[in-house]
Length: 350
Ligand code: NAP
Ligand code: G4F
Image 1: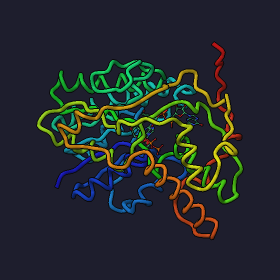
Image 2: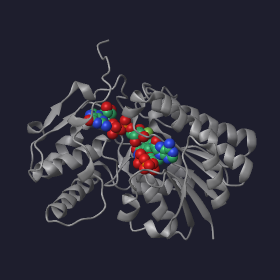
Image 3: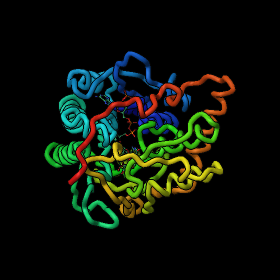
Image 4: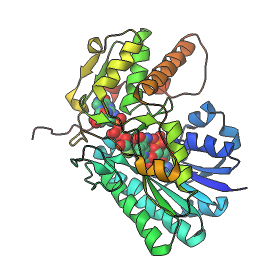
């Protein structure tokens, strides 16, 4: 039986990937952080919590990462753990470099010294393209990161290539464009909107505050994107691949569609708030996935409209069940109202 180690198994992609690999017959190990309150709701939601092996590890602690490799003896390592929210990386830039950047070297060193024949997947990102001016981005588009998060990911991208070329590790970068789902964290704009639209529909809330409505993203479905991670590691040669839908839509379009699916007018409920603007933002992402289609046979199936519908329906359903008194593991009831979060204010007048 093959074994796989997933760092960040408690996150959106970690949970979907765990289910995908279990269904393929893998022995799945996942790292998680010790928190004062357990955080396994996604694994429970997908009904795989009892089928995975859990190993405590933190990306800032090399010894815990080495131990995770020793215990799991993995054939494949999927390095998904990161401080993954771009907004937070502006507030905690040093942590972003340590966790999201150096964390990649810590795990690659553990692979190199303990299990050098393990195949390695690095969760790279379309944020690497940042403020570049290509209209559609592919593997050959130059990188121009625009946040501490993407600068750290750029380091992770290159160190992955260095371990591939320098030490012969089978290491791949998946340059994944934004991918969403009902398991997405509530701070990301898609789930923030689907959750708010559902609450407003049911009279629990009245409005939602958003920042840059004009930013455009290439949004796909997380459950499909994790399959590409596995495919990359099954090839004869390690390579880097863009995974995307090749469609782009603005935050405003997302909000408009989400609210209209519930019979609501988004303009009556969305308040734009300068406090939610980032010091720098990526304005346009649209990915060319033709290399992945050609070499690993991956294509996106669920596109923008279907994805918005899936997320809105699921959040509405959860809130309806919750209001009826049903109790189940999920994140929204415990999430603080954004007005209560006193985050760093950025000077934006340039
Ligand atoms: P996510 O839901 O935020 O999950 C991140 C995971 O990393 C969580 O399990 C989290 O643990 C863990 N983590 C955070 N800090 C850690 C630390 N110091 N030590 C150990 N674990 C830590 O992110 P995602 O959407 O699944 O994304 C997975 C990966 O793909 C990330 O590297 C992200 O940057 C990258 N990526 C995501 C997208 C996207 O659109 N989703 C696109 C491109 C690349 P807790 O649960 O304890 O917080
Ligand atoms: O949903 P977001 O926070 O995602 P972002 O910044 O694109 O990053 C995500 O995708 C990356 C791949 O390209 C990943 F690497 C990364 O880990 C993460 O998964 O923001 C999307 C856009 C931004 O332009 C942001 O400024 O939406 C804009 N936006 C407007 N109002 C907002 C809001 N974003 C958030 N989170 N909250 C708002 O209220």
